[in-house]
Image 1 (cartoon, rainbow, N blue to C red):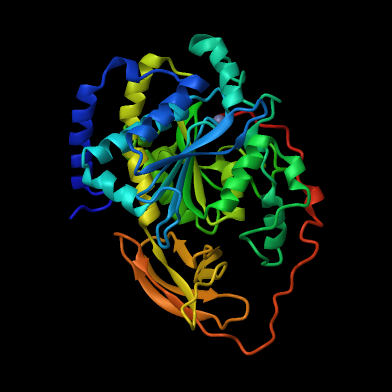
Image 2: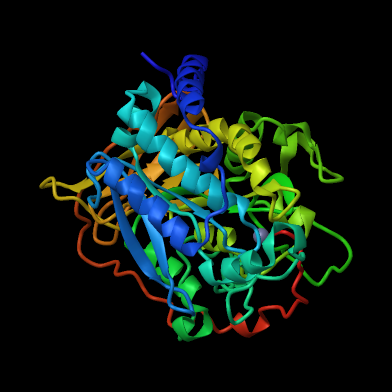
Length: 451
Ligand code: ZN
């Protein structure tokens, strides 16, 4: 029996991967222009048609499709209790390593599944994996036209309208920090009116994607440093200039563990000294590094059930093709181990007394001030560290139900809830003007670090 993330799995993975790498040489490690990337993704799909699917979440400003490659034992279908995971690359068009790693990772999943690698087979069977190698294909082409040697720090970073997509999400932090003062809601915050007109097409596509899939865990791959960066990115008081402050989420310990999972499984990230910077254990809180507004990872946490971290993977934003194989070998185990984290904590179904699933039920964990919700099939997923927790599930029209659960280090514990109808009354009052204070959203100078 294989353990998630266990040494035996790593050993098997190493052996099989070594075997595969012995076959493949040279031409596999190249940069992919848009057409080449699309060809590569479709090639993987046709090589592994029963476990993969390609879909587009929309188009870039210049009309390039934002293609996602999905891996699952039932592609295209959400199966209850099977968590959804995503990797997003190349959000900054000139930060290209993530894009190449995700193409490589897609080929790897297909090949290892075909070869019968138990660890990969199990991942594909138990997880729905979505891979978006390039969120900013237009910016990439601008950067690639300059080539690796001549690429500047900023050329091709934004989309074709030169908008930085990691400064382009609705600012839910401002709303949450405001609510915090009155111990108000801090999850599934509402979007501002007309948000669709306020974001770029690539951002719009990604937000709709988040609305259509109940993602649980995610990573956003960048370059320009080597560190695993976790929320919040935005400082609580961004007016404090020249000084950085740690901005913890209610899930700070979990985020640290997620970041450490990547950094320690990565060949050198955890060592800390990279690119002239030092990050203890190769991880950092976003705001304690430098504060940024309207980033994607904070948005994931405040708007959805998804926990996302931002991975900075290379000092050189556009490394030469000759560096790609080493980078792949340095990141391969980390990409697998991080994905496996989606299977920790607790998960279960929320039913009514007739065994009908209840969507959008709120699952709260005692001592952690951040709730998650059940998906359309009534299933929920809650990442947790080992320990004993009191878990309460509630939904409008039902009596809340509380259960105690002990989480171990292995796979997610299943904990189902059966809610009884509440005596009539108690309608949820909707706050009509949640965004009354949004005008305070700060106008910081855009910080142009790697994130
Ligand atoms: Zn970046």
